[in-house]
Amino acid sequence: MLLPNGIRHLPGYLDHPAQEALVEAIRAVVAEAPLYTPVMPGTGKEMSVRMTNCGSLGWVTDKQRGYRYQSTHPVTGHPWPAMPQQLLDLWGDIAGYEKSPEACLVNFYGDDASMGLHQDRDEQDLKAPVLSVSLGNTCLFRVGGLNRNDRTLSFKLASGDIVVLGGEGRLCFHGVDRIYPATSTLLKNGGRINLTLRRVQP
Ligand SMILES: O=C(O)CCC(=O)C(=O)O
Ligand SMILES: [Mn+2]
Image (tube, rainbow, N blue to C red; front, side, top):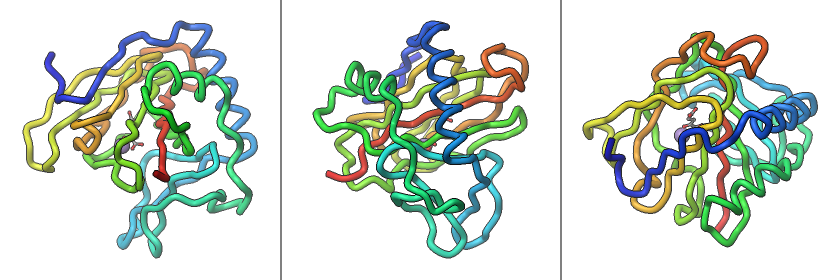
């Protein structure tokens, strides 16, 4: 399958022990910075995905102030937990970008959650790639072009897969159409975790 320029799919990049270690690290992040349900700007409609972040900045959204990065958790008001070393190492190994990631958005998808087609464009530094890690149940990922109405293609992301959106593909539309229940035993209660590492400031 030919992906748009700048988009890379690295199937099975993380082996099982690396996935387990990452889940442990994310559990510690969630213990400090609980998952919350974000809402869309303007409408206030709840997203089906629950979110939190780690790193010096985190991506948040609410009805009044919309999409943005901030240094504190919107519910607890505390600074985000530090980014686990495994994620910094992963970025160093894959991103090919001199500056380190500032934000890791943690998305938790229950088996009936999804994410609509969107661009990641709230970062000031668009030269840095977005690096995305999948853990747990397989999903159907969709990627299009630079315009919302461009043709899209879909492929599955399994636990341990990595996707890089960089270069010409950095602003490609993408989303998650569905989760396939019981396709992984990594997460005891099912669902899927997605981590996206992002450089925000130039
Ligand atoms: O869950 C995924 O694979 C994609 C998540 C995503 O696009 C995002 O958080 O911006
Ligand atoms: Mn995205």
